[in-house]
Image (cartoon, rainbow, N blue to C red; front, side, top):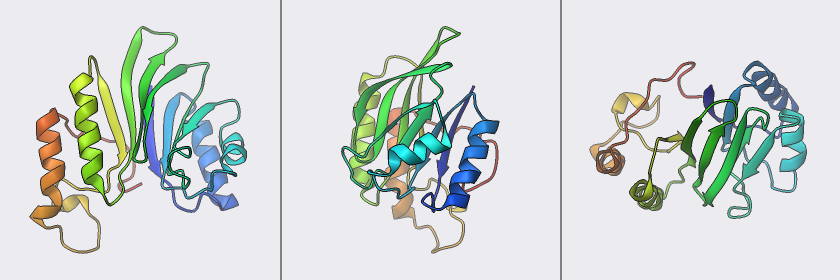
Length: 181
């Protein structure tokens, strides 16, 4: 099982849609989250049908008309039960149909007002009963080497994220693949 999050800019372009479609074909046993794609909500159904035909999906376009988060899964392999949807996250429970595996999953796209995100994530943490995976683009860093280019990371920029991780016991998992995707 794979859970993949991809910060995709330019998803309105045909070549980018083709790239994502090929990626999904090669990772068809995955739960895939696309963030920061900038596809308008009136086009999202057509684009997702092109990318992942037969898959189920949910977006946060009902909350944020810019619809920055899409969560997609193959319903022959997984179920996803929505718990809540917000401007910066989609949270629910994933079940692997063929196995007795269940876990909570939060797909994240942190806006530059991440303080609200940390508060919401703490609320979710306080009611968690089992395994929980929270991944996406937090728009925050824990370590200076987590930022490629741009301005130097200041301690103030990492403080809230580090406090959130400490307060909730969350840890960074090892990743596979390219950096900064």
